[in-house]
Image (cartoon, rainbow, N blue to C red; front, side, top):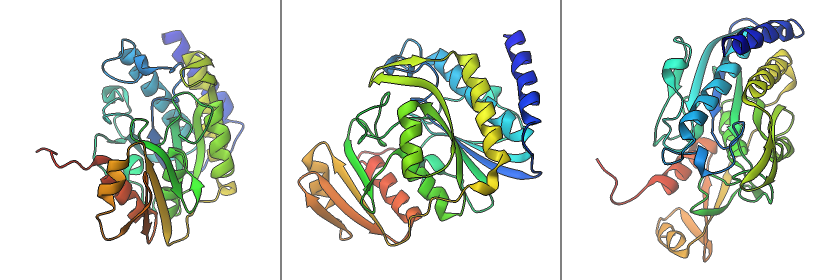
Length: 298
């Protein structure tokens, strides 16, 4: 492990010399787990899975690779959002002591909580394809158990594009994403130009061909450096208001009950529509829709 880390550090220094750094960058990193190297099933994704502990480590290592590369390129402030499952996955004692970490739920800005207009760039680590995508490991949008579609202004959205639009509200571009091949292709099609680190190639919802963890850390660092080295090339992904959100549920009852709200329309048996003034308002509505329950405690 020590040899691998020394090798990674050496590669980082070599690659950093190939792109120009900027001083004083502020970087936001949102990290999910489905798109982390080697992840293919629920065995890696939650506390009940026999491989979860190991893959928390891989997730942490990928985030650390992104942090190290961002620092190579001049980042002095970094905020990391633990955005998978219970929001308590990253091994925080292994993260650098001078970063800040967002943990657990609920959050008004969901996977982008803490973003504001002071950030220069956003980076997505371990992301996955959308529920509308016929390809991709563990492809879903927000909730694989509850939702069949999330559309904004008529566009089928993935978590990456929802989060990019939230960042866009604050003028922050998403410059890099890691995950499987379907994720990178979909994100670049919807959001636009960004660097992509393909750490695995999907064969199906629960299968993939994957590179090895150490290779993923090196690749992620390479792509982060490349992205921050051409920061001026990227534009924020902006949803002009008013922003129309449609959410389709697997079951009809959530749509029926949500339509009781005066600002919600029922489009069909399973689908509701909400119109917000901007993505920040839409984000809060999504967070309410997916988190509220009458028996919430405390």
